[in-house]
Length: 161
Image (tube, rainbow, N blue to C red; front, side):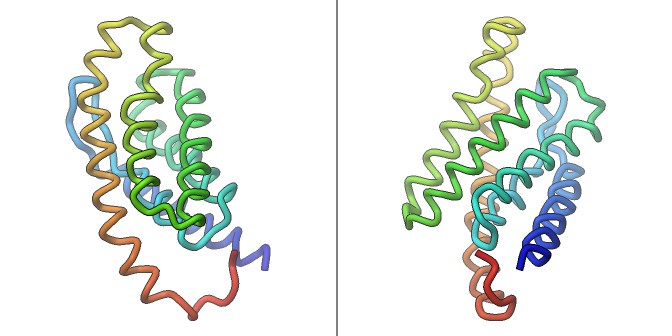
């Protein structure tokens, strides 16, 4: 049982790496679709596993981009861990609209807030529109793919949760 979870989590991390290669140009470098697999993973994995997928997915995407924010990527990865865990718990509770609103607000508006103080208000104001756009794109792609994938996979993988 645990080996299935770890294997599936590793699979979703690998998909995050691939999603991280799909870039959306922005004023602060580029933003990626590395979050889509982490969001989809909540349909198949426990919340903590999905949180780890989101955290490792961000780190892999940041590594691919050259760590433009340096050590601040550790903070972003921890934020992703928490955001994906809360998203997963909302998913498990059947809060379908709430989970998407939470994800967009938390990832697109609240998560970059520390950078207002750590880097500069100008960086924050320049980053938020592009980050919000990337968050919405990630959410839309995941919202379209998740139900279809869950429908196809249901009953074929055994108990993972």
